[in-house]
Image 1 (cartoon, rainbow, N blue to C red):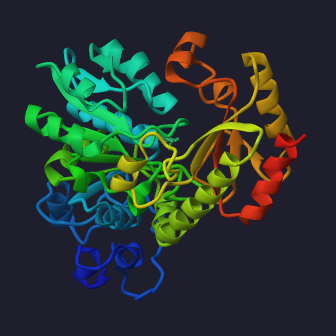
Image 2 (cartoon, helix red, strand yellow):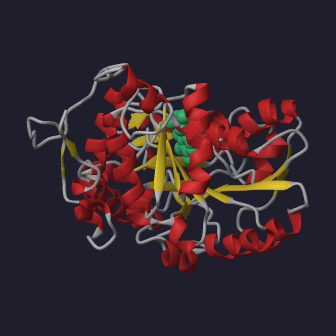
Length: 405
Ligand SMILES: *Cc1c(COP(=O)(O)O)cnc(C)c1O
C-alpha cells in the first residue's frame, strides 16, 4: 500500500500546540481519506516470505501484528508525542498498564522507588501489592517538599514517580526542582500528567524524563474508552515499547482512533474545563456553607504561584469542604450536597464532558485507614468535583440546592 503522509512538519515543534493537536500524526492510505481511517485488523500481510522475514527482524520499517504495530495506534502515539514535546510515545490499554509497563521496564529485585502517598489509589496498590512482592522497595515522601525527595534517594533508587496536581487535594509538586535532583542522581523522573494533559502542563520541558497518561480521562475527555501512554526520549521509551510488545498490554486500534480524535479538541476542552472550574471555585469560596476551597487557580491556594508557573491554567478538579463540627456532621453535610444534585453525576470518575461529584473519604480513598486518611488530609467534609462542559450557572444551582438546604 502506498501511503500519503501529511507533511513531516505537522509533527514537529515549529507549529503551535493547537495546530499539532489536529494535524500531527496523520497517515493516509492510498484512498487519501481526510479523516484518519481506523485500522481494525489484528495482523498484516506481506508481499513475499522475504519481506515477512525483513519485517519480523526489524530490517524494514512497517507493520506486522497489532500487539506491537498498528497504524491507528501509531497515529495516536505520534500525535501525543508531538503534544508532550517528546521524541517518542508508546500507547497502552489503560493508564494502569502504562504505569505497570514503566515499572517492568526499569525495575528488578533489590531496586527502590521514591514516590508520594498523594497518588492515584491503584498506583499505590500496584506498588504495594505487586512490586513489593518482586523485591522492589518503595519510599513515600511529601509531594510538596522537594528536599524530602532528594533525601529519600538511595544508591538503589531506579525511579522517582509523582503526579501533580494531586487527587483530591490539588497539591502541587515542584517538577523542575525534583527533576534537578533526579538529574543530579541519574534517576529517571516519571510524571503522571493525567490531570493537566499537555494542553496545560508539559513536564518534559521542565526536566522530567517520562510522562505517563491515563488517556481514559481528559485525552478521551468524553468517558468512552480506556487507554494509556508513556512519552519521552526514544532511549527510555524503547524498553517500555519492548514490554508492551512482549507482555501485551496493547491499546486496541478502535480505542486509539477514539483517543486520536479526542486530542483534536483537547486544547479547547481543557481551556473550557479550567475556565468553568475557576468560576465555580470562586463562587464556592464566597459561599457561607463552604469552609475551604482547594483549586490551584485560586490566589488562596497555598501553592498558587508554583501552580501558575508550571501550568497554563488550574485544570478541572475543584475540591471543597463543607461546614460541620464533628466528622459525622461533616459527612452528613457532604452527603446532603451530593444527594441534592440533579445535573451533576455522582461517580468517582473524572475527565468527562459531564461534571462528576464524589465524597473522597468514603469512595476513591475509602480503602485507606482512618489514620492514613487523616495524614493525607482527606476529611469527611471534603467533596471533589471534576468540572465538565455544562453551563456554569446550572452547575452552581445544582450545588447550591444541597448547600443552602
Ligand atoms: C485514572 C487514573 C489512572 C489510571 O488510569 P486507567 O486508565 O483507569 O487505568 C492513573 N493515574 C491517574 C492520576 C488517574 O486519574
